[in-house]
Length: 207
Image (cartoon, rainbow, N blue to C red; front, side):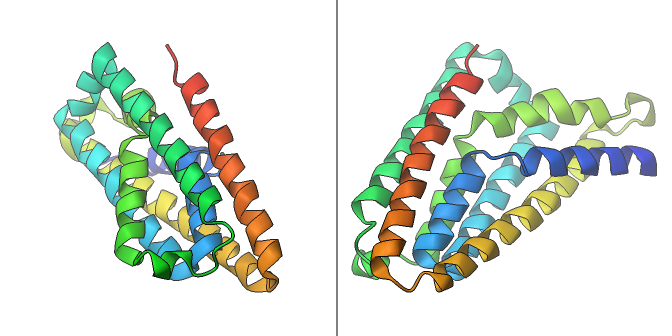
C-alpha cells in the first residue's frame, strides 16, 4: 500500500495546485455568478469527470502518449485556448441579459458539458498526470496502475472540494448583487478574466 506520508504529501501538493488560479477556477466562478450554485455544481461535476478521464488515461499510459506527441499536445493546448475565448465571448455577450440562461434553454446539463469540455481541453491537467503524479508512485510496491488510480481518486476528490467551495462563494456573491447593472459589470469583468486565463494558458503551456 502507498504510505501515509506519501498520501499526505500528495494531498498537500494537489491542494496547492488547485488553489492556484487556472481555467477551471475562472470558468466555475463565472458560471456560478451568472447562473447560480446549481449550474456551478453541475460544472464541478463535469470538471471532476474530466479529471477522472485523465486519471484513467494516465493509468493506461495514454497521458504519456499525448505528452510525447507534439501534434496531439498542441491540438489539445490550442483547443483549450480557443474554447476559453469562446466562453469569454459568450459571457460578455449575455452579461446584460439576466435571463440569458433560461432564454437559451440552458440548464445544468449544459453546464456539466461545458465543465467537462473545459477540463478535457486543458493540457495542464494532462501534464499533472505525466509530470507530478508519477513522482508519488512507488515502483517497488508494484501495481503501478492501481497506485495511479488511487492517487488520481485523491486528486479528483480534493479538486472537487475546492471547486465546490469556489462555486458556493461565487454564488453567494451573486445573491449580494441585487442591482442588475452591478451583475452585468461583474460578469463582464469575469469575461475579461477568462480572456486573460486563455492568454496565460497559451503562454504557460508553450514548449
